[in-house]
Amino acid sequence: MSRAYNFSPGPAALPEPVLRQAQADMLEWGDARASIVEISHRGSEFLQVARQAEADLRTLLAIPDDYAVLFPAGGATTQQALIALNFADAGQRVDYVVSGHWGKTALKQVPSVDVNIAASGEADGFRSIPARESWRLSDEAAYVHVTANETIHGVEYRPAWGQVPPDTGDVPLFADFSSSIASEPIDVSRYGLIYAGAQKNLGPVGISVVIVRRELLERAGQPRADIFDYRSQLANESMLNTPPTWNWYLLGLTVRWMIEEGGTAEFDRRSALKSSLLYAAIDGSGGFYRNEVDPAVRSRMNIPFFLVDPTLDAAFLDGARAAGLIGLKGHRVLGGMRASIYNAMPVEGVRALVDYMREFQTRHG
Image 1: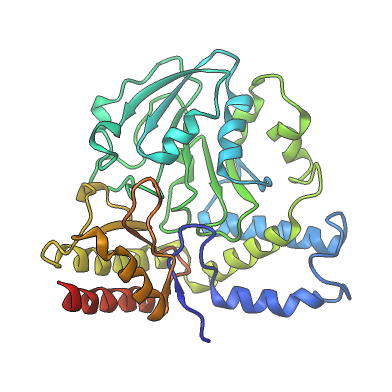
Image 2: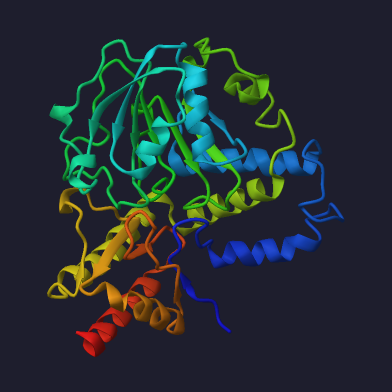
């Protein structure tokens, strides 16, 4: 059987050239005479992998020298807990703008601080992002936290919404970029901290990326185990304990692939094309398909949509799988369908989905 077009939200599709390279390196990597998953993280071979991954990520995202880069084990939810421990005192005010499910999840990870919900889109079902002028920010906050792209609800800070990233004055802006990192150029210098689970655009599940302004690491934060201290992780090149070496290696391959494909400017172009094709199919269906997100903040990465008759959902998914299109079932929070079209999804995959949607509507409309 041939590989399907994989629209899964995460773990998500990896670029086929990356998978083929990993396949070739699985048994024996380079001159190590052992698999990449067997060699020591302390050895020169893996240190080369890790340092090259950081150098390439800095190139891909144009990360300034005054920002540190970490590769912690785990996912974004772990980082949501650690940012409060590292950058806020116990009981200190922190501001959160909640634009969807993962913004709400972030709130659950910070019980030791005084959380101010500066704005929330929950009243309208997270179909929009509250206007910046409505945010109730705190002058004394340790940071302002936003979710750049909501994987489930399909809302993203886009230029049509207003200033991106939003201006938070002298309070540093922290952003969860898990599902949109590297999909377009970003000005890292306008953020205090960027974090992302790798399993959308950067690689496999099990490893994250944290990009943080070095001066923020001078904050004392709260009492915490050494393993949870970003400063200790930085001092040990993210290897305070044994890291997920295979995941780190795959992340490095994926970042290198994105550079070779043309970098974030090229993926910005592809993201615009892919999302416009899919939204046009939804909006042009006469109501057979619908997306309920405010067009000003429609995600270019995760596109939820609903069929006119929910009893057709199972038939739609069965037919999609038969057509070589997988991972389209919507999250249980929303139901319906969701197409995640990260960097590894080729334009041809979106065209195939659009063709299938039109054919399905012809048969069932």
